[in-house]
Image: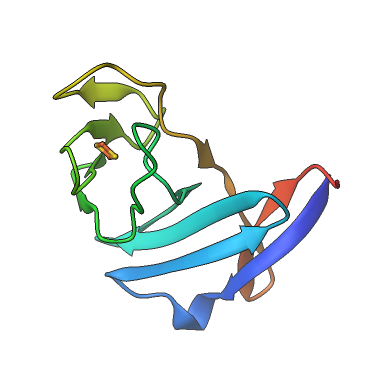
Length: 106
Ligand code: FES
């Protein structure tokens, strides 16, 4: 496992959203109501970007077909068409004045 730094803590604020590409992974770091989340950047349903998704009370809703996922465990809560897999999320790791993620080295 290796630490991949993503962002300096000083740059984070509510409504922050930024994509990161690490090898084949597209990740989205977001902060809402003081909570920070690192999730896959595309919706598990049909791959719509989640940058503009709404996020309330720990539930993220894709803007395309309005599927909803619980951030804490990625569970699909609401589907308007066929079900899909859950949303992948990643544990954030704090190191000094940065935050990042631990991933397997490729
Ligand atoms: S692509 Fe996100 S809900 Fe369909």
